[in-house]
Image (cartoon, rainbow, N blue to C red; front, side):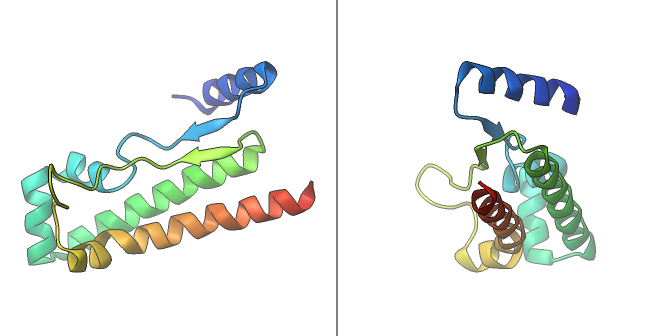
Length: 125
């Protein structure tokens, strides 16, 4: 969706007095990885650790950081929603060690950026 349309919708919500929530793309990180690689292939990548997996994770992390940056710099939002399905019916689809090695580093990069920008915005008001 073009940014002009995204911002138009956010501005309409602001006019209505709504809380302005910007949603990251569906599947924010883990799901996006397996949409790109296929679920079985991604889990195999987590075990075999080919260099391309790390390159894909870095590229997706940078992509998400850029989206967050654009949303924050717009000055239009109150909340960014990060949705990602990290569970199966009764457990995570990976071990905690795998989560910490492949998924958490991206979260560590994305969420502090948002928190820092929010802190600056709060201080400015």
